[in-house]
Length: 482
Image (cartoon, rainbow, N blue to C red; front, side, top):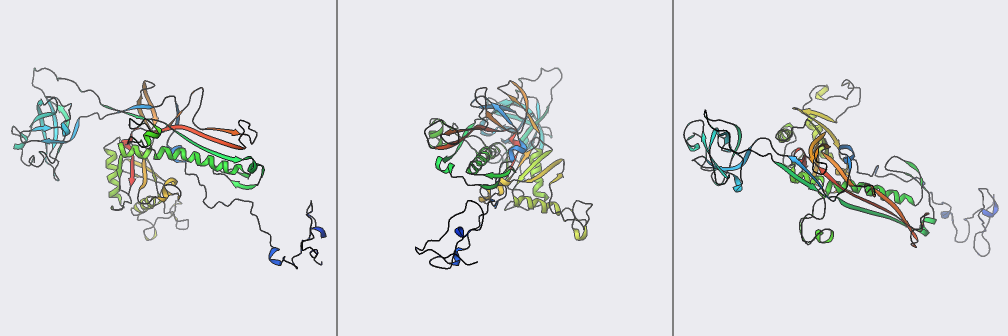
């Protein structure tokens, strides 16, 4: 078939056809004039959006370990139990057996009680002693050792010279002793508790598209972060905005912290004359303040072995000793734990354990561990995408590498309800009432898309949430840092 040549004016003799059919009027020639064969290759349009980052959402942590509950006030107040037994660290002791509580603090020890006292040296000497005198408005007590002599200075090996003033002693009460026919114990010990509080923050975002852009429809086949597929036009960007906002809801609960300095954030968002009126206490801030921070597993200056992990277990022993814990960690720590556990597994060909199918070497080699038990503790390990993702914590090196979260629930006294309640150690409180639910609000304004709320030639989609994270029993959490 001969090509249709350009007309005398140089324009192509071509008229688009309303249907797909080969006609001389819609045949293009590239053999003359300024039209050459390099123009015969029209661009290929890929309808389908390419997923180069996989699932981009990082929100999953709080859905796995927590719950969400409504609240109606500007503040959440709860109390946590104190220690049951009397114990004191960092006190000083003299040769005469006078113990001064650190920082001139008061104590609840009474005359007649018996204590276990350590001189807190590298190789400590530990003695049992009897409390004979309480003085100094309950800031000092005098003790007499059971091991002989009238003062602790008479006890062989007990070092008070270096403890008095510079170093310290530790002690705890283990009982009491009284003569026959004497009066009972003087005074009483009131239980201690910690009253804690957090406040919600308001989180907002918005998506906007003009009326002109909304009328210029372009279809793209997409896959959403929740697994849905299909064709979308300009609202594809709205879907990304919504997903980003939902991720921000979780990240704000993890990263949030109170504004401490007046004249800064407080002056813009809170009360300039007082601290802690802006911001909210997130997970990392709560653990740093009331929990444990360690450079243990995969730390830059530690050995990745069971010895370093056992130090973490000792911390948990001193707290609630919660048996089941979740490890949410980055890739480096995950691999370090795999290597640590694999080193304990010496059976199989060449010391290698094969798979999960009867350890058959004909099956796939499994070099990862999802859980393990050490001592009386069960640990379940999972990678935390938030710490690995290149657009969130993954861009910050040598910082937070993971967190250990206790599983189950805690019993606390809710001062609003006036009773003991069981709550997950981590849970989100959001503002809600019969008039307004602010858990996750979304509404549309403008004059485009069927909404006629203003004369703005655009459609605006607004998002709002008001919430805070409650971290109960933070002493059972541990933050892994570099």
